Length: 168
Image 1 (tube, rainbow, N blue to C red):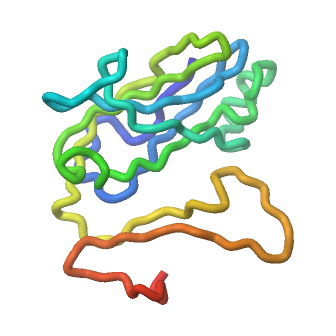
Image 2 (cartoon, helix red, strand yellow):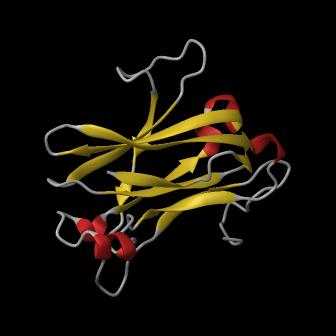
């Protein structure tokens, strides 16, 4: 059981990177949360009739409210999950309506739908740069005196990001 928190159902004008978040718990423990979208005409689908988008990442400590309500359930401290949806990777370069679905899976392979959201993306009118940090990973613990951080950024034309990264 759980919930798909963001984006809001009916959200319009989404551009760039969009956070898809929620929480999930199970009496045996949630092993993964997968995100899907409704297919467009002619697209290949998984057996559930949806197009696979990606696996969410569990974020320890992100949902203390859920942990407090269900302290005895396995992995309650990491019930929160998130996925950064790069809307430009959606069909039509992320322009138009899409329906997202989040499914939680337990150790027995059972699944449940956490929620669905109808969104409309508008990358054709995007003006702001977007990107993400790739390393360290979400929730990763690092140590030492030096650690390289890797990521990327894009911006819609005609704007440009200097190749030396000086504006990041």
